[in-house]
Length: 98
Image (cartoon, rainbow, N blue to C red; front, side):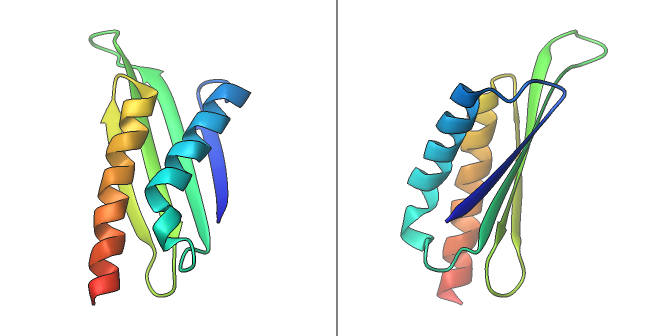
């Protein structure tokens, strides 16, 4: 399974890349035969009003038929990825049942 990572507004370190790739592989490994490409776009920024950091993650999974897309938002980058992956897994399972 090919995974593409993109970091916006922060430096995408090797540690983040490795961890997110492992998270994606663990969550989607049983659907690996159907998945063409997984694209993860991570955006980390501070809110204007509260000054609190926020991670916005968008995951797109290219599979035969319409692509599956989910987003996650949290103050922790890994929690945002985990939340979006949970949504992706649910959508892929529903697509398989069709």
